[in-house]
Length: 114
Image (cartoon, rainbow, N blue to C red; front, side, top):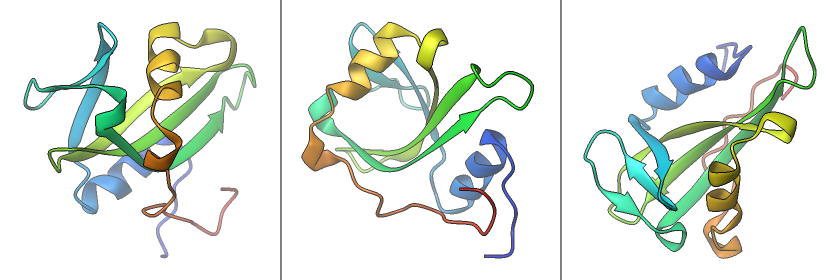
């Protein structure tokens, strides 16, 4: 792949081209699809790839991009802070996703520092 991805938004655009067009948020312990309004328990969510980032000017600014599919077949991304600035509800939800639901099957690997 010749495209470059320097930050989270670059990766989101690359995944959108692969059909990962839904966006999500965590509300009341569930993942909510911003496109459909549907909510999902952790066991109904599959992480297909993830990318971690450190801030260029401040290494404590850390984020993680989750590439996910829900049990109804919709696919999208979720960008979350982690480390000292992490939202505990987001972190708790993603920590509760069963290990068997986590893979790197859709990971986009580029030739830069990923």
